[in-house]
Length: 285
Image (cartoon, rainbow, N blue to C red; front, top):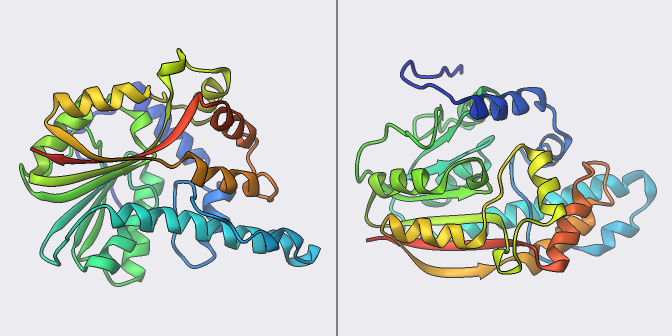
């Protein structure tokens, strides 16, 4: 299945740069190798206590066992996110903003039986995700669009719940949450898992700036999220610091063949408190 940018969509120079990044990284080993474990391809990190015995597996199978464990932790993160959506009926419609290769959208449909729309500005990701939906024979209910999540084109009040999973650092939060407030039904739910810098300690640390440079993103301050939510009628109902739950994932990833060199920046900034991994759940007024 081939996807094309809608004629009215005009990407900014920055968005084109991000799309080009994923065009080049079509075979990113973190996404590719972990996804091969069971066919679910994620574009986020993991949480939970790993099975550390895999680090002592025989050398011939050690790396593959670590990769399986990393994938399990990433899937656990997606399951945890879906747990926060509240009651979802098969007749509801969900939205995955910045869907990557579609793993969480596919999981949401399997869990709730509802329609899911995912959106990405990467044609590589959109084509891959639609192919995954087609192979699973769920393309009629799970659709992936090559489009800008700041201008979704979705009808007003049409979405029961939506999420962003490590994607908000690529957009302006005021613009994003204005669009989310438009498409969410009154009482609809927004779930966000994101890395943010801890502005209680001041400006971005060197490690956080390294993360920005690595992923061509702009990590937001923690306070920026809550200001933007409040300004757009999205009321936080739950906030959880997931940092302690994600550190073991990064420690294990650093010992794998899919390490990318950014692991120490994450670990050092998590440990010194300059970077945090947050869950924010908010309802639309």
